[in-house]
Length: 474
Image (cartoon, rainbow, N blue to C red; front, side, top):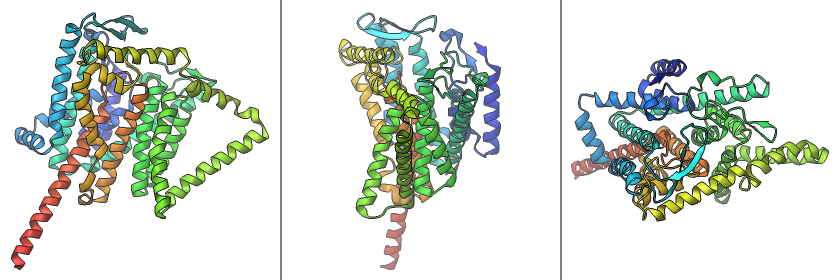
């Protein structure tokens, strides 16, 4: 094991900020997601795997919760009141068993894509046990345990303000480092964030797309930065619309700017998909005749942008040529590029592995795909995918019919966190290669699930009080 001094320094800085923010465990964990290419150590025993620093904060959270005096009673309360937690526990067990069993049981019977031992590229090979079975499954288990630990904390005390401050700190750090990366590369200063990129995997931070520098922020490549940016944008936009927060409004505007300039296909396709529900809600407001000021502002900005683009093209069409080349290379011609064809081949072979394994899957971490749903299906099989879909359904439904039993601030935070996780999954569906939905998914699952239980408890308490008052009146 090799320890990274810069990675440990970043961890210490986050702990200090989280401590003075009065929420070291929760705020520290959420803020650590901003450092997607920072590792505190390199595990040579696992082929040079370098866990991101969020794993340290997740382990700290789990250990702190485990050490609580009434932990068994609290765990019983969590598993007794949050039914989807049983599905999560079952999926964790299935992932561990499948990661060990399926690569051995179906060895050589299907094709997979694994990292070359030189860590230079992804290569095609016959199915066999690989280090990814341990590392990727480990990340997933850490995420699941984090969700359980958060459920314990959130269910037994009101910590929604810590969640809100943690997400704003995450969005602020991500936005700030994105701006630093953009300004540094645009000014010719190079990669200013290179000292904190301590992860051992390939770093594509100096790439150029159609003459534009690619923004990577604190991540290893533009695609990973774009995925996190879309999640942050969804959180800030939702919170702004529900609370009129000026901080969320400004962060959303800057994040939109960074997403557009990220030159990532993931960013553009994901942003287009996320605009669909936004446009639908605005159309619904028009049909109801209740247009809000924020919707008028968004429409005015879009109209101004369109008029500006048309005016510039009429004055000098050549000015827009670099942007046209960028759109052609990242979206229109992406599927016909070498990278696009390679990723499409990964997805086709990943789907073929489902047939080759009779729907059981090849095991967690056995291969790489280029879309999260396909990775889930190929690695977890039909049974594991069903459990993952049920967990996803918890996020999609949100607080649901018990929303009226939570205060407006809690509703805004929970809905914003849920939308951030869903936006992250949309981005992962475009380009992610692992079946692990990411730590944001597990945090959002815990926030939504516990908010729903607390809302039902508030409703039940109100009903008991009402019945008692009616009985006294009679």
